[in-house]
Length: 325
Ligand SMILES: [Zn+2]
Image (cartoon, rainbow, N blue to C red):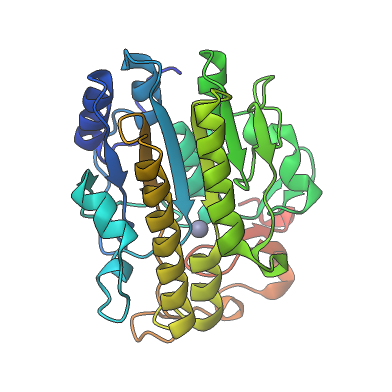
């Protein structure tokens, strides 16, 4: 993977620490926690995955990356939520104070930044819903079939492709994009994204899959696994970030992490298996007094708008050509 000026920055020091530990064959567990408070971009530098696989000297090292969508920076400090897994992970490794999402702080732009190290303007996912005026095609989130069209993904290279190109087999579970052939490759294993709302037993299935990953690690089927977990984001959007449903989902992912750590411990894999848990963005209640709604029809004549996509902090407006804007 080429390193250029457009790489994300955020925790280069942390990344360096992770890769250093891995180089020495010592396990490191990294917890990333999203932070909405921060809004300042820093100069950009490196990317963890590339460094891990580039620098590690011990090929027995394995890595699990769990993307827990929508965990806000303060969710893990909520006194209503009794955590075991996250603190256990942090106490045995390192924990970032916060993570600065890229703008716009929505899922697809941040997922592809996590996977590629690039900002949205460089990796191409500028929003969750996009319109390509040359192809006259909408990008709509998975499971819509347009989400699997290669041209949306081919502007950059996710870490699972980089790993495969370097001979490190990867297995990706429910993280959108793994079903797409990018730069001519796919991960060794891909179970495509499955929508949370159609999933009856997401927590048990996630636990089972992580145990399955450990089995596969022990059979040397692959060394990198990435897994997506949607519940916290789904509950936050539906019931609000302070809702009991959202808190329960944080409790649930914590429980999954705790089970994973138990399994790693009982299998004596602590010196081989590394874990990174990362969020992509936070969220705030739309009822917050800080949220100011803009009625677009008071700013623009609706007759001049051909297309309007997305809602929230950023929106996409395509105006009639006659305006020549
Ligand atoms: Zn998200």
